[in-house]
Image (cartoon, rainbow, N blue to C red):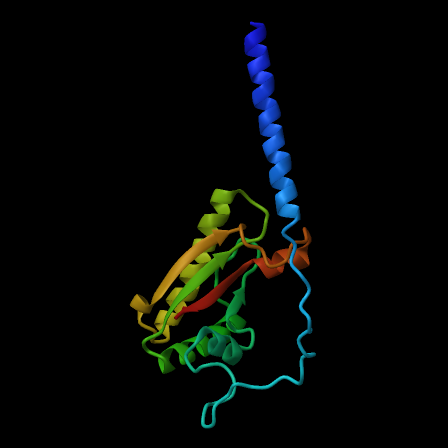
Length: 178
């Protein structure tokens, strides 16, 4: 038994020596400062080529967001999934953009506030996403270009536990697919 203890002790000592030697070797591998520092950054330059339009690429998600100016998101009342007049105006703007780019597809995300069970909010988020999708289809957008997903309460945009935060989280968001 004493021989076994001595062997274990020598293995532990050998391991410790290797770890210390490795740490010392790594600490000796510092980077040297360059002889000359790079110049200070100058004024910003653009990489726009002549004839290229300024701003986002037409038909891109960035273009969609720029043109929607917040109308990519519609909001709902507590436990509601109906499309009101304000939502109709936002969805009409989305439909107009989608009709301009007939090869673009979109996903409509349904979201809820933090109240209620996970299962209830997933189902409510799905009803909200489908309500937005159905309205876009009624405006002439081909249903095969639209998909829906419900995130329930899993992706809040406002983290507070008050009515103002909850109202921001009860939403459907349209995201174009590139």
